[in-house]
Image (cartoon, rainbow over all chains, first blue to last red; front, side):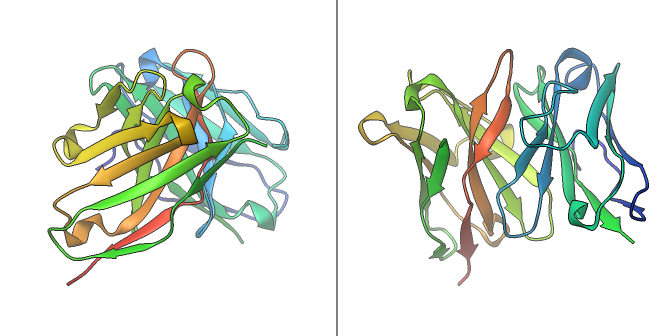
Length: 110
Length: 120
């Protein structure tokens, strides 16, 4: 049972827009920033969004992040087959004094 | 370029210990915390702990308290994660990651991962 709650799966067709939600509490998302990671099996996780809505250089602007209260979301527009991966949200938790992750969302491009 | 390179796969018996290394290059090792995260088969990412390479200070997830130790050797820019009393549930890929940025920051980059298999 992960501290942050994500839907286990999401899907869309090429060109569509999909969103992935991440729900937390006042001790994590509500009082800290949210980062998103993209993970392909057998590879190292990759930073996708940091500080709620910032994109590292090299990440396409099709990816965007937002945060409101104790929830955050990742949006992917213009879906491409190469976007198939697992996506994780993460935040610092002041009560647990540690990082917490969502359970991950497996994105399928139909 | 900034890079974290981890040691190779390990096979251990239940009750044994494992020590995974993470060598940093391309930046000043002592300037950023190193974190360890694992992914068990079919599971999500799970944070294990952090270490300041500068001071040696550490913090561990409650789940691993007493079983995990994160250390470093600054002369070779390498961090280590040792996990003791291994059980089958510890079979996982273990990642190190640099904690970068302002405030609490974020993890970037990550090491390539080290598969630890616990089996009798």
